[in-house]
Image (cartoon, rainbow, N blue to C red; front, top):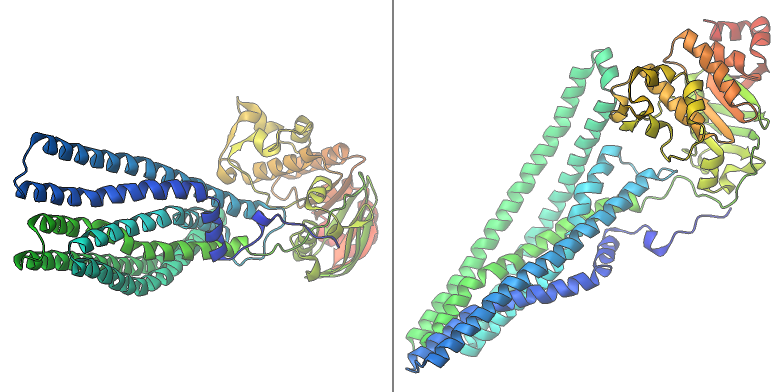
Length: 570
């Protein structure tokens, strides 16, 4: 079997690979950002150095106006450099950060929207959290690295300047910085682990909310909303407690970093004061040392916070890798089926299906009366490519070619499986029926699905607004809207799973006739127990205990098969 070739930039990768990719494709922005932020830090460092030189110059008694003007001009250049380099440097880095976060959000969303699901043990709410918070935190690495380098520049410049005044001052800055980073790097590992657990628990809480919103009406129906609320409250409480733990760890980290930086600044200041008192450095050098000791707190603070941001970005990247590195449940081929073909189920065994065999000729309308609802769901899953080929026995052929040999796009263009619980999206009736805007059968699909009354109820007609999940529509209206979308797709082979369970008997009769008429000459399979749809079909297959046990027309089976009569008669 020919498998899909994935471009290098689309291949699954671990968390470290995701971070490397983010850094590699933002090289130019990071380079310019590093240069500008390095200029900013160098300018900040130069300010106390310049002040020290001015004081030193003044203490020598040389007070001519030219030297004073030159000094003021130098300070103006430093201040301008600091202002502009910060403004443009942060603009470049934040633009790159935002763009990179967008790229990863699109990648994660694309995985969730692929025709074949990925083999990952995550719910939709968790994937949503990964596509938002984790994508943003992963992209922070683009901003973190230049800030880390620029902070290092500031520390090195300060150490060199102090070392020129006295080697002991420079050595103190270097040794103190190494000690601070060693202590904080150990603490940052705990932050990374705690953050990863927090993100997982928040994602689970989001998934629980999504599940509850989806099932809100059924929950109200049997009075389960209070139990569901308690269940969510427990999950949410776990997320809250973990968030508090992370906040405490971050607070301890920030407090420790601030205290260590303050201790180093105080040590530099006191050492410089002692050296000045002993006459080993000048007053100008003392002013410079005190100024640098105050200034160095900011780059040290940034420098010491970088390990934490790196660990958070890595934890988020690892969670994104859960989605991006997960293999698809099926690998596609490259073949395309002939148009208008037949459907052949040859010895399929999966779930409740037992050596299932039947064939639907091209252009035939076949209804399958399924006695066990689970069997209908299993068959629909196999046909919809939601089951990996290795998970079931037998073969499914479309136009004589196995599904595993066909490309995903070809399957989707040729074979459509419309589930009984088809999703309704926020938008309009028209965009739900024809999402791509290319169907030529929208009016016919609306009429065949008996959605005409819904369209006529509203002045906007097909442009009437539909809320998320169709919350402003009744169950029957949502089901008919989903059916209209399936009919408007006009695929060669259409499989409908219980398309009329939420409509009344009269509407069901009309829909059955309309579907048979609209789909004439096109291969259609309906998994149903509806007498109207069974009667409209060219042929009825009885699926019982996972295999076909009888076939014929609906009326012949009613007359000859008591079990069939009892199962479908209403």
